[in-house]
Image 1 (cartoon, rainbow, N blue to C red):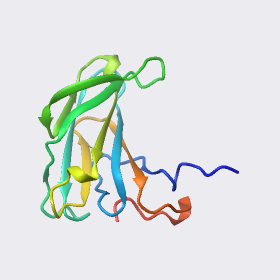
Image 2 (image 1 turned 90 degrees about the horizontal axis):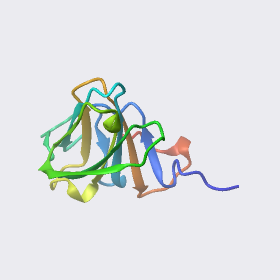
Image 3 (image 1 turned 120 degrees about the vertical axis):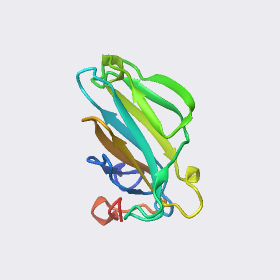
Length: 146
């Protein structure tokens, strides 16, 4: 029997829009996977905080690269680049319905342990914490926002 990825490589928070995700001490990084159907575009903002209550929250302007596609498996990911910013703006085209951005734990300011990505529209946000520092059976994983 093979070991599954959940608990070994990743933890997932499927409803992560505006939810604090623990990084430092929990995982090497988080990939936010976002989706908004209908080719309407969206704006996503990355924020960091010292705890899961949002203490000292401030924008984390480190996003220089992200990937987009339609999200239905019919096309490959397209790399997008921008000057370092805390926001990503997807355009009103079907080719940008889906978006993925990676955030490394080392990108957070000293004393900051949590990040969140917030959609200003109706986009869904899934947080996939990756490269877990402690591997556990899924039922023994800590809450990602704790």
